[in-house]
Every structure is written in structure tokens, then in C-alpha cells.
Image (cartoon, rainbow, N blue to C red; front, side, top):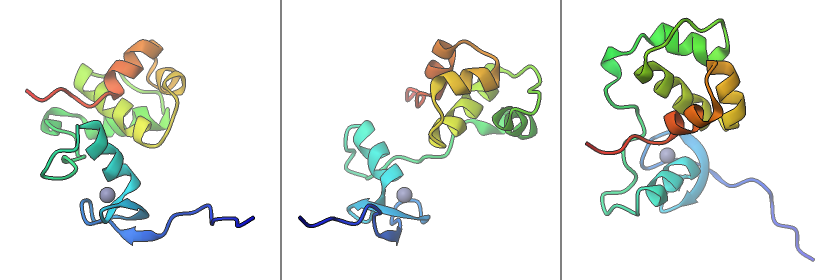
Length: 116
Ligand SMILES: [Zn+2]
């Protein structure tokens, strides 16, 4: 029986430029997943950066992601923090605990925002 290596080849992702495990089409696993999630857009993986982040208190968002006594956050800040934590692979329950919100809220916040 042949045992395939567990890890994927690390490449510079054509989409995001990060050095990450390759998935397909020259994209990393994150970009490929994002592309799939958004219905395989012809233009490739949509931008992964959060939109409308200018009105965020980045320090508050960062403190929330580290569990460092998050101050009251705005919805946009909770959403940003939840999405960061989700990208790190945290479970919704863990995100909820860290952001001091209901797991359902964590799930809702961590979803990519609908296009307006
Ligand atoms: Zn990528």
C-alpha cells in the first residue's frame, strides 16, 4: 500500500500571494474554498479581506480575537472578529465564548457578508 504524504505542496498562491498549501489552479486551500463557496466565479476567488473595515476599531477587534476582555463591540466589529476567528479554524462555540455572544450569533457573524 502506498502512503501519500499528508501535507500539500506549499506554493505562492496566485490569488492571495501567501505561501500556503496548494489546492488547485495555483490557489491555496483557503482561496480555493472561497472560490467554491462563492459559486466558482469566473474571475477567481473573491477578495478575502473584510469589506467596510474603515469604520472598525481594529484594536478592539484584535483584543476580541485574543480573548483579552473584549470591550463592547459594534456589530461590524463582532462580525470582523468572528470572521478572523473562523478563518483560524475555531469552532463557533469557541468564537461565541470569546466574543461573549450566542453561538448562533457567532455563526451568523462568521458567514461571509452578502453582496450588497
Ligand atoms: Zn490563496
